[in-house]
Image 1 (cartoon, rainbow, N blue to C red):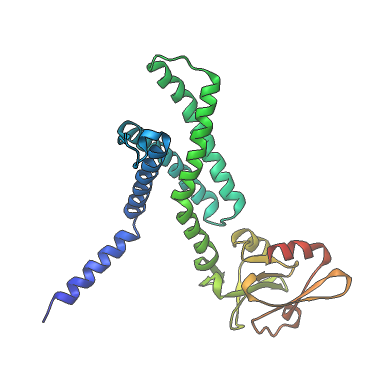
Image 2 (cartoon, rainbow, N blue to C red):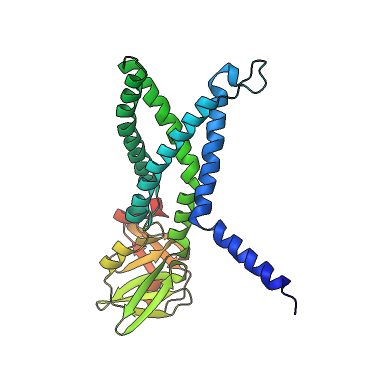
Amino acid sequence: MSTKQPTKNIVKTKWHLFMSSSAWRWLKKIILFTIFSLVVNHLASPESFPDGKSYRFPIEGFLSTILFCILIGIIAELNFKYYRKKYFSKKVEIVSISWYMVSTLGYITIMYIPLGIVLNKIAGGETEFYYLLIGLLITLLLSFILIGLAYAQDIYNLYKLSIKDAEITVESGAKTTKLTYENIACFYSENKIVYTVQNDGTTITTDFTLNELEEKINDQLFFRANRQIIIHKDKVDQIEKIENGKLRIRLKASIENDAIAKINISRYKRKAFMNWF
């Protein structure tokens, strides 16, 4: 029996594991840092332009920029791990991404000011506020670009995970069921019992309250329509304007309960619902 095919499959599996590992993630960042350093240093002065007559490879600037990128990368990575655990694991939105960028740039500022003063003293120069400020602004601009390039894919992957592949564990007495967000049409409360409605219309009782669910689930996908129901964005089939500025929502899932089949949203929640939707 030939062993070529199993060997080929093993190689493919190992390559796939490497491509999805943190080692490959860091390798991509190192490649990015190197390219970024080359571009920045070749644009820094006329002598560094590749097509110039007096071209000289900017080795000193290249090495110092690589060191700068490594320091920025360490700060950005540590802060990213914190935000991934505390914020991005539940929801990835513009506000949390903005705070991640602002806080990372803040840490870089804290690092840059004393480091800049020390290096200037070592070089025997005088520390002038104007030049320190200009250097800081240039550093923050380059850091912003570098962090955006380095972590755009990571943040996008977390965003996809948070709205597509996430799941919730539903406990009902002695029974525990795992449901992906994509398989949930809504949650509704009736007679102090909260039910999960799946896409096919089947229901599962839960031990949660709607308030507890509202804290746990991703509010980019789910909306508390009223005191009785939480709905999934992708399961909305029809939105109808009714009297007194209210909205009536119909879901795609076939629900036998008439009170849930037609969901009313008050005029006070109408704007919040439309902004979310």
